[in-house]
Amino acid sequence: MNPRQLKTFLAVVRHGNLTRAAAEVNLAQSSLSDQIQALEEGLGAELFLRSRQGVALTAAGVALKAYAEEILALNDEATAAVRAAAGSIGQSIALGTLETIASQRLAPWLSLFGRENPGIGLKLKIGGSGELLAQLQDGSIDVAFSFDRGQQDKRFAMRRISGEPLVMIASQDSQARPTESLAALGSIPFIATETGCVYRHLFDAAFAEAGVMAPPIVTEADSIRTIISLVASGVGYGLVPRLAVSSSPLRGNVVELPWPGKPPAASLVMMWRRRRVQPPALALVLQSASEHLSPIRPADARLRHAG
Image (cartoon, rainbow, N blue to C red; front, side, top):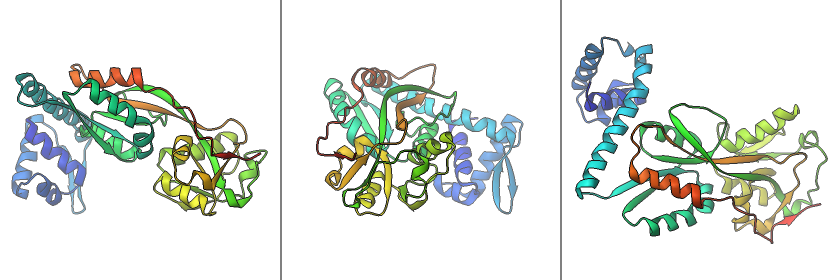
């Protein structure tokens, strides 16, 4: 079992198809099949079930997947650590985050970290919460900054950074008024992100926990910026992070309404893979984030409050 075989194995896992996997790793399909066969023979177990529709993992393949990702991540880290120690390359860390968090919460800290640690290169990748988790799993990023959805994974360590409040907004021209209960929101149209997004999860959970029917979602949008724009134009209400509203150029076109009951809030967390040997650059990132990433205070005096 060598790194090349494991990279080939994970390519097949990602695509579920030998032809597409072979194209990704620049191998002829016959060579790819030979590598998978050699890996299976070395482990003494069949890793894939093959059919006309493609390939699927066996129980043994599922067990290998997590180890393969960790082995390759450690292999890359070891190579980078040795080269950095030898002075042939500098150290670098890849961070993944949601767009709103990147622009409003991380930018000042990243600037500070860069000044204090000029020898460490930082790569910032923007993606959805599902993308970030997948990138953390396959080693594409070293640290993910996202909102906690309560999902536990023993492969990752997690640290809470802050609690970020969500606010309900409506168009300033809509003459919207505060409601007395969540049930009273049942007939009001809302704009929300797609199912699976952390913001949609918080929206649905607020009504589910109260035992009332959620309002109708008239439009699904793929970004908070788009939701604010649609709310400002009068399409419906929205539930979005306050930090996104306070920095929006459309903040003068929306009004913040009090949420009936306890306002929803999201825990901003940082996650990284657990490992026996922690790269020095990662240790510096974790320490700096713990010291300098503090809760943000709403400071936009121009955002009008109704009621």
